[in-house]
Each structure stands twice: as structure tokens, then as C-alpha cells.
Image 1 (cartoon, rainbow, N blue to C red):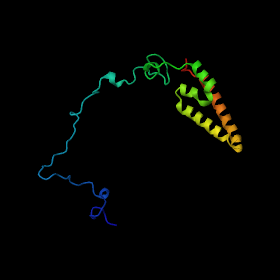
Image 2: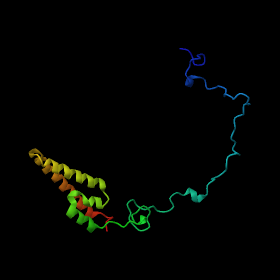
Image 3: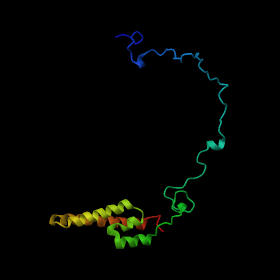
Image 4: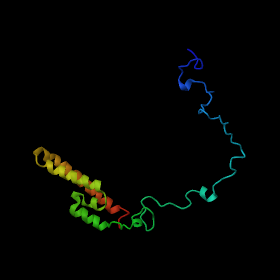
Length: 156
């Protein structure tokens, strides 16, 4: 095997490190700049107040209080009422109306889809057996939602 220094077909990473820098035609080579200790700034160039990060206490995630950035009050939105969510759950819970009221549109559409699939399965005799399990799943999902509504800290 030949050494890369003698081989003109060597890969670029195998060539020796000592190669002269290429110059544009008509320019003179510049000496490399050397940084001296005198040229570097002494001490901390930033004021001490900028070095101390997070001087104030940040609010906890999900905090709902007047004046807290990111909460519902900061944007002028009033919190949802627990009684309204429970009433939506009682009268139209199978359709996911309480989820739409609380802003959980994905869960609302999921319940609507589950209800439509269960209704479509009722058409056939074998599907009626399957639809019982779909209705049971929808019932359990709604009971879990009721418990979540009752225990939700951000509902007034």
C-alpha cells in the first residue's frame, strides 16, 4: 500500500495537513491573525443583572388566576362553569356535547363517531351484538368524563 503523500489519487482526508492556502490571482498572502491576551476583553462584559436568569418566580403550568400570563383570564376568556358542563353531560353526553363545551373537540368527535358506528352496527343481527359493546364503551367513557368534570380544578 502506498502512502497518501506519494499518491496523487488519495482521498482529501488522507492528504497531508501541511498544504499552502490557495490565493486569488493578483492578491498577496495575508499573515494569520494572532489573538493576544491584550486584545481580549478583561472581566465579564455583561452587567451582573443580566447574568442572573429567572429572577422572578414563574407560574405553575395550568394556573388559572387573574394576571397570570397564559391563563384564561389573561386573554379575557371567562372559565367554563361546572354546572353547565354537567348539564351538557346529562342531556347530550352520548353525543359528546360536554366535550365540545369544554373545548375538547377531538374527544367530542370521537364520541360522535363511536355513536354513529354503534348505530350502524345495529342494522344487522351480528352487529347488534357488537353494538352492545360499543354502547358499553361509550357509557364508560361518559362516566369517566363526569368524574373528570366534577374534579376539574379549572371549572368554576
